[in-house]
Image (cartoon, rainbow, N blue to C red; front, side, top):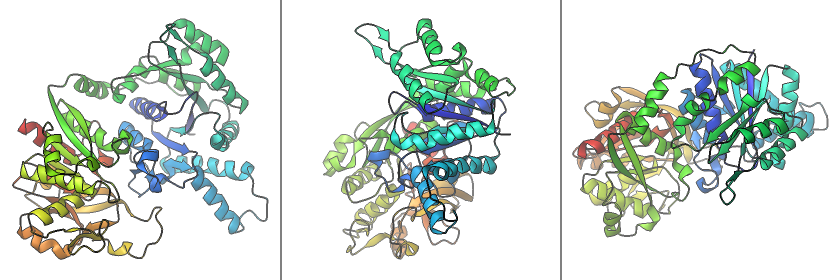
Length: 533
């Protein structure tokens, strides 16, 4: 029987519940258990696909095309498992399913209510995830903060579910903040006590507390929390701020967290095999080289908008024993080529990630021109590829004012255009080209050198594509299409062979990079950067 770990948060939001869930997954996998992780988000959106990155950060895309919360990226990277739509549940998707069932008459005329219909649907998603992956342990993270109105149906569903599966088959971990008052030099436990009381009022007694803190927690504070929250002293776990998220699993394990979890779940405590993870931490802490990457985006005010990109750059750095510094550059702040030269003068490589809309595009084009003309290693992702094609068409192929129809519907040279299958689509949610598709790699190219494979599979999220009407003129001028769909109709990767590294792809390689297995394109990019240095 699958065992369940439910993670909730209190006192404040953004406590790092996702990193905790991912870290526990990593630790339990290291002890030989099969683990899956599920995220429950209380917002009414069906998924984050239509949200602004400023609202919710990055939209993470799974192989099956699911547009999900960014925490699923952490889950995949830590437990090295591909997740799917069932691993991300929102209030919107739950309500939509229940309303559709009601419209079809599946409730046989019953009055549809929060209990049992909404809570029942939430519980069914837990069962679906269990049946799909058949894990030994399913970790379920509940988004939001205890006390939020919108998360109440999830909390009630968990209470019911725990009762139904019986004692010893599940546990609750509550994550809270311990505020530190520097003027008095004190850590305050009262907010955490109140948060646990709220959780108890909903019918859930947590078996474990994980305490986020800036400073080490003393024995007195731990004893007080154990006493007033009715938690075993060994289950009061400190989680202080770390230099890197990849240190968190080791830090937690040193406090015996999985030993206590397995005891509560009536599972065997096995020896953790963490040597490879410790080697990773050593490489992170002892870099021999350093490089600065200019990340030129449209949403740089919120770093979470590009979190998978940043982590992928770091992964490639880990492999090379190199520290990768990110210089955040807002593309709409670049209005002239001279400004691009000045801003980019101290970077060793340039990356232009994905995005939507016209804002900041001209700044991206100037940055790409600078990279191409000065042989600065360049990696373009999705929109970063489309902009590379536009820049090349304008400044090398002589197609003045070439553009994408996303930015200028009347442009004379539509070098990037709406995909044919997208032209009759009216809605926005989950209507793009989404998920994993195969790509055929051209031999004797930078892409083939990086992948060392003829066919690869990558995750997509786009509506516009390279316009094949301009394929001949652009390739004659030196642009190489080094990756295509198997039928050759969709350009997936372009590159400029005379540069040390100028590669751009239509897909999102950042979604498949792992800390111990960097993505080939990111690795090739960072290799080129370090070789130049």
